[in-house]
Image: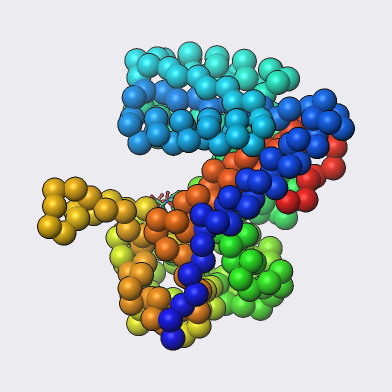
Length: 296
Ligand code: NDP
């Protein structure tokens, strides 16, 4: 079997276009423009690229983008002050503090201060709790994007399917597992202490790999016809040059021979994350204005 490739880039472009349409309508109907504030501390080049992309895509969707750059020498108190000011600003509907923060800052403390209604990353404990109890809240962007890709291929009803999520981080693995559970999948969360990981993965109709180990999931771990979502973004040395190349947590070549559907890296999950951030910001703006949740 050769898997059908899940084109996350195209899906994300469609989602961004739907968000832009709703944003335009919101302006006409209610005079409301969603605003996303992104705070970057320090000069990490990868984070600077992410923040620039987020700003560009926010503006392209017709939303206001507010960018705050703070030097790596800024104090935690200064960052907390910035977050408090954004919480109080009615033009800001979504707040994202770019992680990782410099070592002298406690990211849990910073996230904790973000108003949960403006927590478009969905990392606040209130939003994690809402997801766990099945209440409406902000859902972390990467797993939200993964679920959209899964439903696009398998349809809206995932009930009874066996899903294996490899990785239990608070930003990907755990919320991904909660989302699949909410869809009535039978969910297994695997991690570094899981015994016989290949055997566990082989049971799955849906595999989500969010590990950070390059090319770990091999084709002979995958059940024939399974849907494979590769969240991993790992840089490895490029053969025959001094450069690097981006690979996922799944050994794409062998897995694509067995899976029914598979996301490539790059061009799979990656583009969905920013698109879902924009969707979350729109949702947050509507909720803060007392308007119904937009259907995207
Ligand atoms: P973390 O490092 O926070 O978590 C990794 C998880 O993988 C942990 O739960 C860990 O288990 C588990 N793990 C590590 N090694 C193994 C192993 N050998 N076997 C089984 N499980 C293992 O990573 P993140 O969740 O933040 O990110 C995961 C990957 O996704 C990374 O490659 C990251 O770059 C990428 N990513 C991509 C995004 C995108 O937009 N596409 C967004 C966010 C992340 P344990 O808990 O036991 O230590």
